Amino acid sequence: MKFAYYPGCSARSTCAELNEATHLVAARLGLSLVALESATCTGARELRAIDPVGFYALNVRILALAEREGLPLMTICNTCTLNLLDAHAAFVSDNKLADIVNVRLADEGLHYSGRTKISHFLWVLHEDIGEARLRAMVVQPLTGLTVAAFYGCHITRPPGRYGFVDSRNNAALERLAEIFGCQPIDYSGRTECCGFHTAAHDERVAIKLTGQHLRSAKANGAKTVVTPCPLCHTVLDGFQREIEKDMGESLDMPVLHLPQLVGLALGLTPAELRMDSHMVPAGLLASAATGGIA
Amino acid sequence: MSIVQTAADGTTRAFRIGQTERQDSLRARNARFTEGELLKVRVRRSTDRSAGATYQDFDVPYRKWMRVLDALNWIAENAASDLAYRWFCGSKMCGTCALRMNGREVLACWEAVEPVMVIEPLRNLPVVRDLVVDRAPYERKVAQLEPWLERATPYPQFPEPLTHASMKSASKALDCIGCMCCYSACPVIGLGDLTDFAGPAPLVQLGQTALDPRNGREKVARSLAQTGIFNCVSCYKCEEVCPAGIPIVSMVIEPLKAKAAALVPHMAKHALALRAVVAARGRVDPGALVLRVQGLRALAQLPRIVRLWLRGKVKPLRTLLGTKTTAAGAARRLLTRGDAP
Image (cartoon, rainbow over all chains, first blue to last red; front, side, top):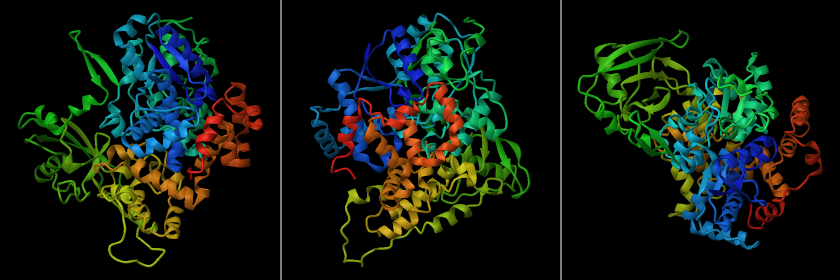
């Protein structure tokens, strides 16, 4: 299976380990990833608000690059995924916008005709690889590892984009965790917000919100949190020291990127998956699974 | 987006994500009950503002097409005549019966019962008694935002030229029934006075007039300056619970943010900085973004920056040298054309 691969900005900067882990895991899964070297940022949510045409132009260009390769597009970031899905939906429903954007793309000989399929790595695991094959690929069941799934917002809301009436009913991560032998736990933060999107001007919201989620995960017995989004990871892991200080209690909760959890089950080592590069060390986590990875 | 579910007998079924819920309609839920079956209903009760809350359990016999409101009416008529709850129209118009059922904001008049229900008042507003909340904080905020039209130029003549396109966002906001579901679901409002964020419901009220093209720029700027709108985290919790189906983030808050960026640019510092960083470098350099938004204030985070640097998560040299990525040329072309704002 071949995909055009869009890691986004975060996996190329603060979460570089996610990019590396994705490449290793993709190779194990038999996914061939084609890099889109000149792909820009998708503009986060901020650009979408203040410069919609610029936002659509950036996103549609990424879709056009994938279309030129004739490949579906795989993402590893929630917000990038929603941005690209939004841009695609606006492009195919608004001819005037489509023309404006294609005029901008024509400068470099690009054109989008609305054919690129957008899929997050989480959906690729479920849809393109499938539960049965995935189960057969597990070489290192993570027995006994209690996992708190942290979805993040933009892979499960808005309701109009994903079809959830109640986003809490998303169970895609828990089903994966079970396939890998983990024990998913229930807690209050599963589909809540990490607060990343206002953190550049005021971290306090992210610190307070994520503190509630991590505390709940810990109280319900999680040994680790797993997230499909590097932006959530940045708050869950990167801000954890500040969160502990704010709450006045220790959390010490390792946070895994989704490909790292998959990688462990497929027999990759914590070192190969760069789990030591997190702010809260996750390197020893695998031994917490009684399946026992040395 | 689909997931495959394996049943106990080994058969598999493919679901499109979210499809499982479309089988959770009023009809489907009703089909799971038999007449007279007892529903387990737990209601949060408190007698006044200061007293602690208790939970009281009721067994409510199911009747066909039973809604949450019907269950509350049964309790009030048969088991607890002092139960306080509000409702008026019973048909999703008046917005007075909103409450939380099993942790989710719903209209009691529009939600089918479930076999086990925990019923609580809305969050983020003071509780008057039982399920009744005090709407005053919301109403004060709305009044402060001056949600009316103030033309900059005199009223021209009838009919005023208005197009569907120019009223698109404002007309979505006009669907609001003021039920406060969104206000209760908003995590930023849940943090109290931490920020000056007005919250989704007051912003929807403001959007009805601030997104109307007839409104004067100065008036709109004055209102927007009091919204703290850039504290919205774009989590879409408000959209998820809105019984009127208003796309609150994408059709109200984002257009209001665009107006704020144009009329009160200092509010939009973060968004404008992100645009500038992407236009210059092609991708976000987190260090450059934070420096641009926070200025010298960013230095207060020095210990964290050092920790991140030791783990290879930030590259201060790259930030300070303004290193461009392979995407810089494309981003500049796309974001700095004359037709961009």
